[in-house]
Length: 345
Figure 1 (cartoon, rainbow, N blue to C red):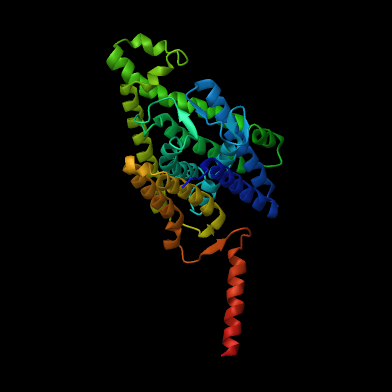
Figure 2 (cartoon, helix red, strand yellow):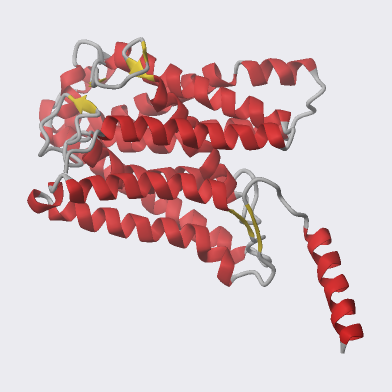
């Protein structure tokens, strides 16, 4: 079956962003409109900057709409994924400071099943062999997904706590993509330094190297087998701690979930999971790498669990697509229906 997955991916990404954006317009939610545009700007900024600074990967020229060698749909997908993950974590009644961890984990679940397939569809290319690290995807990219979503989500949620009428708040909002990328760059640098330090100590045997690292000159060191091993260890520790925090906070909360099932955000993330799972089957990549199919199915089940867990924790369930119905309106409707039924009897 000959399918143009480039076109399918672009249509899906554009449609996902436009649906979320149009709902914000329909609801006259200026804050959401701004946050989506900021997320889109952040997505393009980090992709353009990463390509020209690290030279570790590049995108295919088969995409229709590009800017500075980056497909525009990638920025739209970043915005759609970030905001869909945030809408998901908002179903859980936990502190806003913890929700970015939920958001980052939701995105990581998607990336674990997506990235290794995407590079085999030639969407983008990493400069490491396909049999290294996460099936051709550097471990720092997996950490990057955690850092990207966590950082931007935390900044947006922090801005929401500020007085929107203050001039400094508006300045903070306008520069949020730049601030988020600056923090992201620091987080990635710290991650790589932590992976390189054991290698420098154990294999080079010279502490002075720790003070004279030049990442641009010695960038190849991050793909040394021993550094790859430490990147994997650090990533595993981070993911375990994320899961520990999530489980602890959910169990600790007395009223764990507020079930407002958002069909749109669920559909966005589900369609992305399904796109790469279907492409895995159609292109028969699973025949040479059956473990990727196992990962895709397992991560899809985790994705479903994150969305439907509140269903088993909350009695009242409010499902919406474009217009969010408040619980009070629903209760009023139920009361009217009860009165009508009693009179009919």
